[in-house]
Amino acid sequence: MDTITIWLEEMLGLNPDIQFDFLETILTIVLLWLIQRLLVSILNKVVKDIKYRYHWQKGISYLSFFIGLIIIGRIWLSGMQTLVTFLGLLSAGIAIALKDPLMNIAGWLYILARKPFDVGDRVEINNVAGDVIDIRFFQFSILEIGNWVNADQSTGRVLHIPNGMIFISILSNYTQGFQYIWNELEVLITFESNWRKTKKTLEKIVDEFIAPQSADIENSVRQISQPYMINPGTTTPIVYTSVETSGVLLTIRYLCNPRLRRSSSSTLWENILTAFAAAPDIELAYPTQRFYRHTDEKTVLWKNEGEG
Image (cartoon, rainbow, N blue to C red; front, side):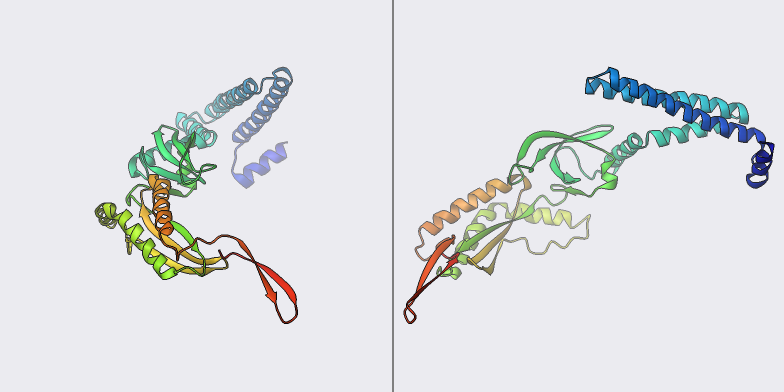
């Protein structure tokens, strides 16, 4: 034993007192861990209620930590005779044990200082989205949207998210800065339809729908271009043309309020259906089946198509 003590002193520069303190610290940690495991094992056998068992396990864990902190603190305080050293070790232990709560506090301070979002904003973080309804010391709460509900409407669930998530996840803010998002509607018509007329009809419908919001959209564009290096490009609606196997696809792209995405789509579709009903040369495409007779070989061929 003396040989090991001398070797450690020569190699690491640790005097025998420090070495003894290290040994006592390790034994204390091991002993407290064994006691904690024993108590948890007994608890799992005696307490059947999962909720109570969970809280008791947490209590035992916290109690073991603080007892170990006191014992180890007394070991090193008596060995070093310095309160500063003990407080340093205590701070390090607290920082390690309370890493997540401290990160949540740091996230709270970051939210207050930088304001990546505020109460009332619509945000998405860690693949969940919703409207911020509360910001607290350790967490913020959102009213969930999407999930099993279409078009970003509320599910009615309140989700509580730790503030520290803003440091490790991508945060999307729907409403801060630019108050609008791009939305798209896909309108599929048959190949026999007058697609040029259809495109002009769709352009007229969406232009009339956006007209009352044009001034507000332009104002929002000017505001976001000041704090950020953003070139928003065109803000007017546009209709794109492409061809699918089932017909001609016309895609309407327009700006809308994030909270009105579903209602705007509904209004546009009602106007589109009304306009198409009055145009006999425009038909929506849907899956159909056509048969062809080959007169020379007297055979019947068939195939599936998506034209109307």
